[in-house]
Amino acid sequence: MSRRPFPPIPVVAIGPGSQPPEQDLNWLPLPRGVETFSAPSPMRTGRAAKAPVLDLLARAVQALQEAAQAPDAAVALPVQGLDREAQVLLAQVMGEGEVSAQISLADGGSLQIQETVYAGIWRVLELDAAGRLRADHVEIASAPAAVAREAQRAGAARAELPPLPERGLMNGPGIAREIIAAHEAAMASGGAGCHVVNFSLQPVSAEDMAWLDRMIGGGPVGIFSRGYGKCVVTSTGLRHVWRVRYFDGMNKMLLDTLEITRVPAAARAATEDLADTLERLRELQAWLERDDV
Image 1 (cartoon, rainbow, N blue to C red):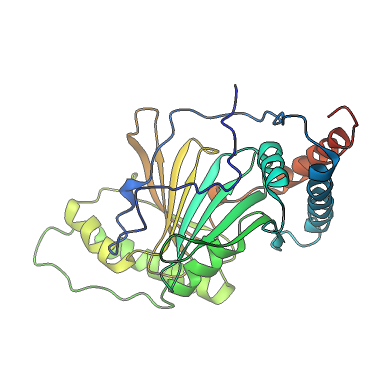
Image 2 (cartoon, helix red, strand yellow):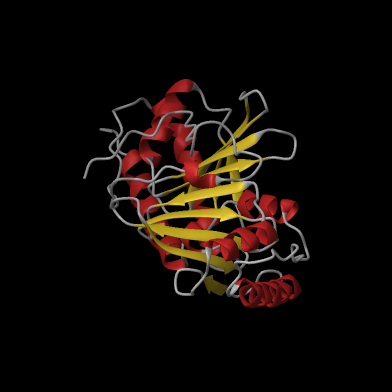
């Protein structure tokens, strides 16, 4: 399957505008298909443009080699210093992958994040409140560092039960106790492990969900993944607590869950993915070094 070209300065918006105050993230778009890996085929370019791109690839290879010993580490490689031709070449060879994200920053700015076709390699743009570019880098990580950082910054360390409604609750209080216990454990462990609360497999009323939504709240991080089907991941108002929803080909929700963990698996590149990316980047290096490219 052919891939869309990755733009030189790719602002991949997950929805129209920044996240709304109430964090109603139903505006996150859902893709129509899942793409498989296909190495990008850049246009022929000069040695002057290839040199800085090859240098960046060499640093990315080194970071991926070190990731085997430190899988949670993130290495940022600035690209703003590259000239236009090198920027275009970098965009062409990196392509566009399965995961994108939008993060609202405390100062009104935002981060626009797009995974490349190489799992674990991300293009990260930082914009100010007016939408102007502040920073642009390629990041080597299982998940961009800002995903966990900004979710934790905005998330509460303690869950509070909202007032009980007069009627309509079924299993909401029991589910709330489960969430609170798992959240306390996650806070003690720094988000290690993963506890899943599956709303789709439990009898819950509309009043239950509204009451639980008030307890959970909304956060600044929205992630959209095609790697596990169609999946929308959003941070909540509780640290280490994420809403994870899966959809079918008609955009009907199949599964509605909470994952209590540092970063959900749907938003991270697995260790096996990083090893595969390392092999492919080495192949890309050798290909770009040829004189006939």
